[in-house]
Amino acid sequence: QVQLVESGGGLVQAGGSLRLSCAASGSIFSINSMGWYRQAPGDQRELVATIANGGSTNYEDSVKGRFIISRDNAKNTVYLQMNSLKPEDTSVYYCNVLWTRALSYTVHMSWGQGTQVTVSS
Image (cartoon, rainbow, N blue to C red; front, side, top):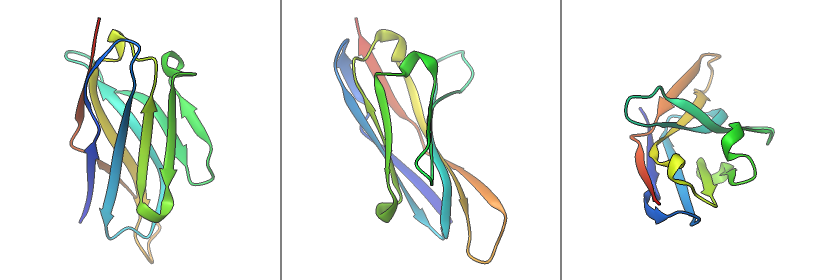
């Protein structure tokens, strides 16, 4: 019904940059919020950044000042610009969207397939 397609991951040197994209498609009437999570091997999935429809953002402390989350409402797409990357940022990054269908008050959650980000020392 609703799918999230991620792109932009890869291998980069420490100090470099990457830009992740996540495009949502399907029977979406409105999006409440969009965000990015990450999960390294053996760890729990953790919040990286979120952005609400009103434009307010929230960042995990370790990425503040380095990462920027943004969105394009017309394209139902969320981006994560990652600068000054560190080896500790190495993880699988997952897109997350909270959305509603027309004529419904139910909030749904969808996840992207995940994209690998590897930062070399």
